[in-house]
Length: 390
Image (cartoon, rainbow, N blue to C red; front, side, top):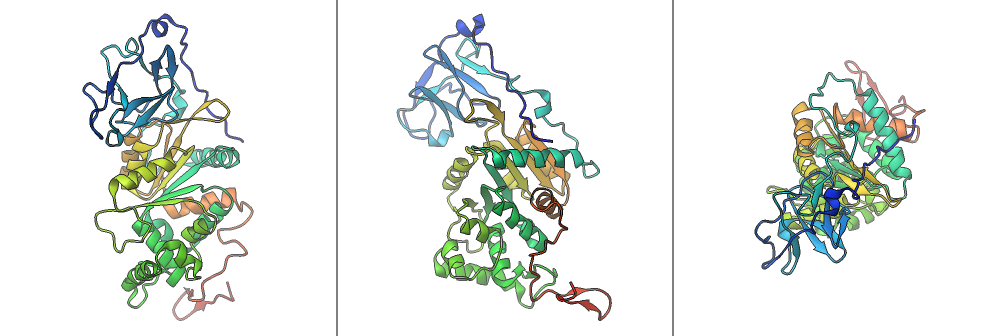
């Protein structure tokens, strides 16, 4: 089964209400970062603006922003990014008559999710749709799959390998994360631990609580993540794979980050701009095990994208977490449009994606997968299964 994009319903602008509507009223920005009085606050739905008699749909949208006329185009901007002289769309009592039309019927009901999915829900159908969509976007010329990862995803050996294979096979075009996720992934490739716990055996290592701080010191001494990796210090991990493949990753800092890593955006505005630059390219987004990053991404990601082939498609956002509360918060931020929640173990989710998309004929551990030298799997009592036996 291949993915079939839902049909976008374009308004009939030959209708009298559209023909009789006036062009949008504009207000001039007098001070950077300050919108003029009566500015129009953007919605999550695809919205058209009438300028010089033509109805214009911006390339991207975002909630709680402003629409700015820029030459022959209309662009959606964060209020803080407004510059003196910008022409901002002003609101009106009758939006259509005032040159603003929110296309609430742009996509069929199938694009919207229904709140209430729980851990007891069967997600077999959602997995099938996900795999079809990922293959579709991987093979599309303008496909851009953005992953948003929390640190727990890299605490598992099989998951780290699955992420690598997904990236190597074109299913990851960008990664958004925080300092912790990247730090522990590099720690795993450098010292084979994550937060001091062995990646494979899950056993705490002696003085392991120092490991991620030692890693941070080493990277900061070297100067950058890329230089640290180039020096041969990191054996494996998703950050190494992305760095080697020149796939972008954006790391956004928080108020209490150890280190942090040199590439972490510590300035909030800078982090938002760098994140938004990647999200404006996104044709689908997969958020895993990070509530704060997922909610912010759900708010910032456009609900649609204008494809190179001249069509308009919804930007699907998947939220994967073992906690129902998290996925429902993300869904609410997304207004449930193009949103798919999956309440499941996040490590299992990543491995399932790799098995279905990259190595469907193989088991969880592929034939070329090396087992760390430190790995010993306890069976019973004093019995252990060695690497050779595995």
